[in-house]
Image 1: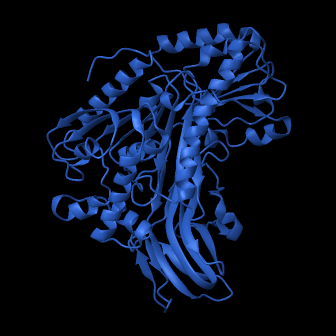
Image 2 (image 1 turned 30 degrees about the vertical axis):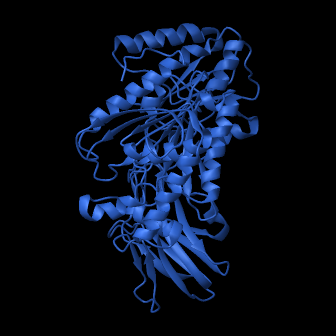
Image 3 (image 1 turned 180 degrees about the vertical axis):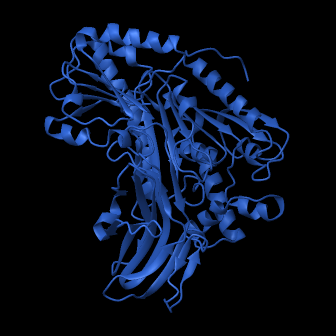
Length: 518
């Protein structure tokens, strides 16, 4: 049974030239028959009570009678392609090309495009990481000199490691890649100029089989791009990881990220993109033009150990343009606080998407749940949006680890944020972080911004967020809120319901849908 469905619009099937894997159903409609055949296929799936969608569509021929909008709900953005002999011939086709972020495949690139289609256009996403802590990394027991841990961020070594690569760290657990997928890895590190790093990835051998195993080495200049483990996709794979260093100086070895690769078609999901700084730390973002009408809805993912985008179907269902943002650093996310390079890069992404859409800041909504609320508020202070929507706001990030000693488990990430920004994890560093945020909050121009916040009254992480929001700014257009009894995670369904109701209310102010009140 086919797992993926792909459609070609053309006179001659590419399947006659290229080998299409058995798990891909390759459908070909000629331009003349496209409208009729697609409607018939939709009806067939409807009668069989099955859902029709295409993982990828490529047009090798097109005429002005082809109604591409018949596919609007059947393909996500970034999965419509066309060869260089094809162009949009009508206003409707040009609109479809733009809203689907369509890409041209040059004639000399078609062979490469048709390789690994199942790897590039699968459904879903997956990513995780190995934190730099003893249960994940083992330092070579033969290494005699000292090392230390910097929170859960880095293993720190400072030595003359010699002129040849020395094996310094092994990952205790193997990386697993399932059948029909390929994995890519990304290492966070900081090093002196005199030190070089090499990652060696070895396929775990099958016991007593005598099977030859593959090995990949990633060195120096290649560490600045995700490394794809280019293995076969006909079976599951397990890989061991070893990290080598050479030269003289200090090196910090951080998290090793691993995610299902889409090769050149995006991170996590088709069209996913990233911002990366000089310390190899990353933010990821995904932009969907929707119907290209205001507003642009920006959603910051919450705290989670699994890496990838959150809220796709919720935001997609609103119909408007949206931007998903996720923070994969630290343990579950770094609250969207980072280097100037990362933070300025994220602001630029949002501003660029507003410009691309022809919107102003008053066509912008920032939103998030739990950890994502800090990102929405923090960047909202610079962007002056129409509205900021918060569910379970966490704004006194520095106080979370201080409070957690008596009131709850807290987040390890918040301790590491203090270490990262202030090289300390004491109460003074915590106060400095929070004072910096609230000073920025007090000075921000929020006179055109409405804040909607639903919160837990006895939140064991930050029970003062709503109180501070209403008292620490000189001028806010309006703050609308609803509190529920309980701790941070005691009534998430009620929080989400109010959050979505607030979204519907704001969208209604833009002439979308209906508002049923808050």
